Image (cartoon, rainbow, N blue to C red; front, side, top):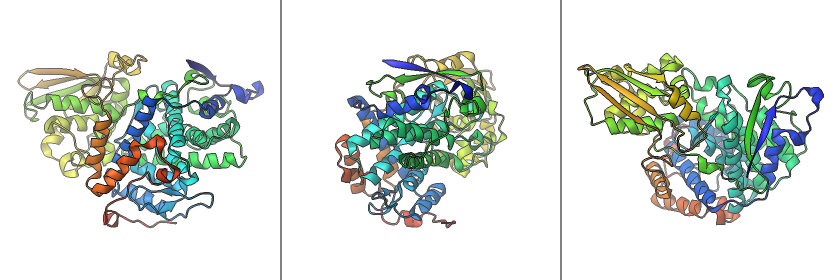
Length: 506
């Protein structure tokens, strides 16, 4: 059964024992030898396929190319065989922390993989690159890798359920550093003490502001989770060498909660699996059918449903108001007060976080494409710009309540669209969850993940490479150590040759 950890700030003179600290309890969960349930294993396989799909689609993009070049400019560390880099030949290896970096950027670049939203928001698939990189480096088998990934997902989702970071403008990857460190600890079979120290270091080095997701959003958005994964690998390395971390990292009077989050009087209730309880957190997360911020998923589905109901030529539209949750309104809606969200010259990363833009394009096109929908020519189309500027969002308390609901049957990430035409006609429709959500119209299953992989991989991978990867991924828990080291995607001849290869310090 689930247990609840009461988390609060402690003065230094209270001498909070480490056994009472959240980081210690997270380490105990990571060290628990409990096996992974079959349905969790199946979902882990789905997400490994999903990560590879979105990484394939981003192989030639500039941020991914830069991160890949950085990784390839570093030699394999002497303690293992190294880890693979997405797109590169199987025998082309780098040090695991740099593989975590390069592959993490590739996975996050298109904002197209899995998500979990609660008190905070997250992309728990960001745990996969660092844990897989370490597995390849040390020669772990598929069974150990599955156990490590189950822990990474569990820890991040448990933290996201309870502790809001964005409320205090702290970037959400602060929950990723600890979860990836914990997952690596499980993978390696480390003791509680070592994992505890790694979690503390990983959290301490991955707290940063949310400016990476505000205003004109830069290419750092894709690098932020990769940085957290890289820091997690390095934190585990230091902890294994006997180095210690700031303590208590969460509860200290100069710690994360007291000065970065809710302050010295704050408290949280963090739900955690009890000793011997299987780690099932991944089953509460969901992936994306569309390449856009998760809270745009349902709105794209609603827009394509409305596409044929009326003319959405801006000459016919008076206004469109999207009534939605507080979070959607203030983060990706007009409530953010970011003029960049209405700028046709804005970066792809910015448009990805603009629900007015996304709804306008999906309404006009009746769908969404991970490349075409973001092209400058698409964003700058005059009729789109005119329609886009007539779309606003509004917070609705009921949709906010549903967004934060603990009941999965009523938790919602959509809202209600009110479209007022110039002839006085009013069109209203609503959607609670995306079609691909577990409670949506067409929940994603294995065949959908495989189809998504094929769609995104076919332009850059040879046909036999697509089949090779899918075969390995779908046998994940039974893979030998040698097969785990081949769990990557190799670009077709000439694909990476045409990608940028920027030079830097290394």
